[in-house]
Image 1: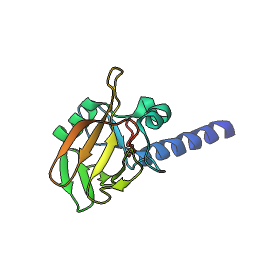
Image 2: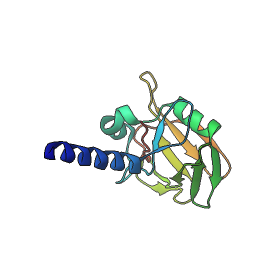
Image 3: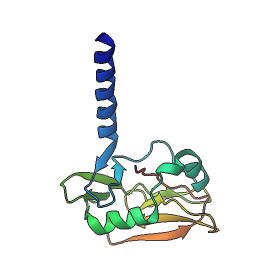
Image 4: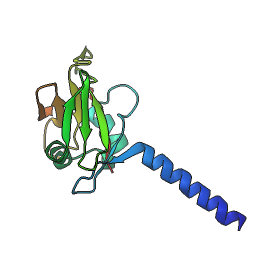
Length: 149
């Protein structure tokens, strides 16, 4: 009995950690988005792919997020709200250029997109208060990472 109670408590703790880390926005695909960027400095594409490959959002997941959710500019990023009322915040964290310079902090967001083999560059999401685009970018630039499940 004691072992069962301990197992149950550990399961509840794991579910709570999961719930705190990933948000269900009610997307048709069932994709869950992490509620914050990965900590640390900006990642090159090789670093992001090496560390987070299976959880980097694909282009279609970014498209779904853009098409199925409400995006509201807050002055330093977007609050993204799903049809179920849950939301995440994507900060305009800026980026690190391939030359090592920081730019766009508080004004623009740059995030890596899982990129299939065959492209010289890598796909990235770029946004400001007026638009969001998916662009081909230099793989050695530093970008933020937001994960999905």
